[in-house]
Length: 183
Image (cartoon, rainbow, N blue to C red; front, side):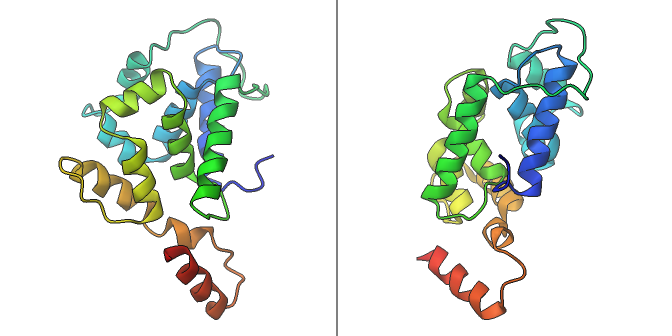
């Protein structure tokens, strides 16, 4: 199921499963995906909170509460319907952007498309679909007030398009594929 996902995107889902198990949740929710993204992406982590350990404050803002005993991480937790939609939206974003694989940027776009606590928190912090989509596409931003967000996202996804290309391709093929992506 996750063949098209980059290693970083797979780690986001792994961390989301871990978060769900720590909160005693029987399903991986979009809030857990956001926490997984924050664990994987330290720059976004710093952007969303100013405290030294922002994960608890973000979890609190997301409205997460321990709903039961911690679940063993060896138990395979299913995705909620909302989380499945986030992954579908992420795949759609990758297709729209012409990317060969699904990365953390696409998952972030998927979270922004699924209404709920995770999306609300991201929007409150200034992350919107157009801003994130342009950064993932590699388009320079001209929107006022978004410089910090854009610079943080650009640092994380710098070279993401090239990293999605298969390294075993000949340099000429890589160059022509990269040129097609920029058109």
